[in-house]
Structure formats: structure tokens, C-alpha cells
Amino acid sequence: MENEDFANRYADALRLLGRRVVSIMHPVLDFSYHTMEFGTETKERQVALFDILTGNVDTLILTPQILNEQFIPKDVFKNNIYTLKKGQNIDPEALISDLTKRGYMRVSAIDQQGQIAKRGDVVDIFPLNANVPVRVYFFDTEIEKINTFNILSQYAIESVESVSI
Image 1 (cartoon, rainbow, N blue to C red):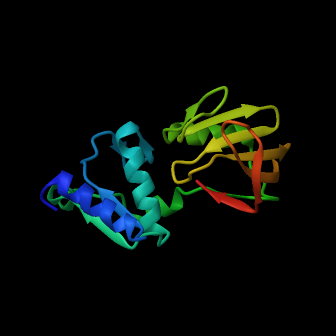
Image 2 (cartoon, rainbow, N blue to C red):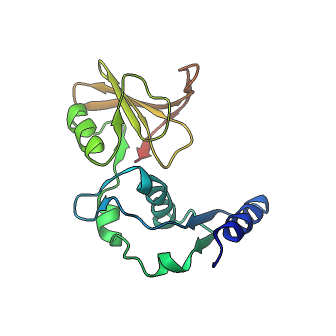
């Protein structure tokens, strides 16, 4: 699409009709294709690429300048998606370290997407590709339980078997 305002209005209209729309409008200037590390400009693009890869898109809207850009290879992106599952063994500190290298910010308590926090054997993660954060309960290195939770009340919303980050 030639005009970004027009593209955004078009995307909004399609969403009103129930379409799953992904828009990629801006070039990325702060991303390393080799390490999957990214800055604030690319978080939106990471979510868009995740949605495309997982088939969660009906319509893709791009600007002409985006068509000339190099995107991360599909296999590199796919190999850097974490899927955490109940019963899985993973060192919580290694998980946190790896996610911070990929642009997640370690904080004492999460309040927005792209943040991660640890208290004892509990790791809170607010994935870029999710509307609610997850709380991962560990017993040493084994994931015992995963819940989505309300960021304001901190109460669990539902128990889930796995989460992709």
C-alpha cells in the first residue's frame, strides 16, 4: 500500500469484519539476524512474523519499502521460538538469560509485553505474541504448572499445558 494512513484504515476496516490482519509498515534498523536479538522497533515485527508463521493471519498488509527488505529466514525464526510445556526441564535462569538477549526486559514485576520477572521458583513472562502474561511454576528445573494471569489482580485466569514465546 502506498499511504500508511490508508493502509491503517484499511487494516482497521478488515478487523471490524473479523479478519486477522497483520501490518508491517516500517523498516527495521535494530535487529541482528544471527542472534535473534532485537530492539524496541522490531517487537511489533516479531509478533507479526510469529502470527504469519503460525497461520494466525487472514490478510497481510505491507508498504512498498517493506517489499524490498530482507526478512529473517523462516527456519531461523522458527528455531528461536520457545515452547514451554508442563513437565519440561529447563533452567529458569538460562531461560531468563536467553529471553533478555532477545530483547525481553527483566523487571521486578511485569506490567507490559516483553517483560520477564522471577520470584523464587516462579517466572512471569509477558510474551510479545500474547494479550495476557503467563506464570511458570518451577520445581528446580521442571515446569510444574503454567497459568495465564491478570496483570492487575495477579490472579490466575486459566491453567495451560504450554505456551509459545
